Image (tube, rainbow, N blue to C red; front, side, top):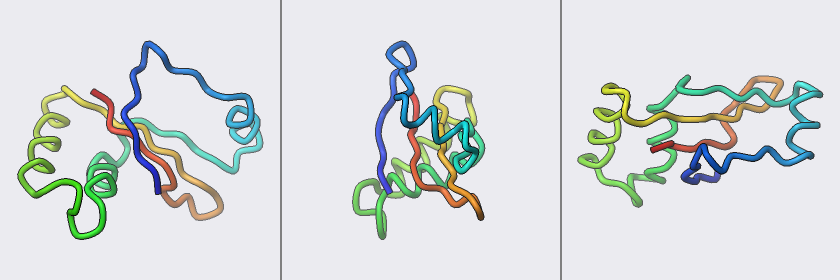
Length: 86
C-alpha cells in the first residue's frame, strides 16, 4: 500500500488512471473508510503513527476537518491506495 497527502487545489488525474476508471476495475471513494486509511498510514504495528496521533486524526475527521480518498480494486474491492486530506 502507498500513502500520501493530496492538496485538492493541485489535483490532477493522470490519463492512465482515467482509463482504468473507465474500465471500472477501480473505484474511488471519499470519506468511505477513514479509519482504514489512518490505520494503513500508521503502518504495521503503528510504526509511523502512535495511538495518540491516530485518535487525533479520527477526532479531526469527526469534526469535519480532514477527509480521505480511497482507491479500491475489483473484483472484491480491496483498498489499494489512499490519502488523508487536510
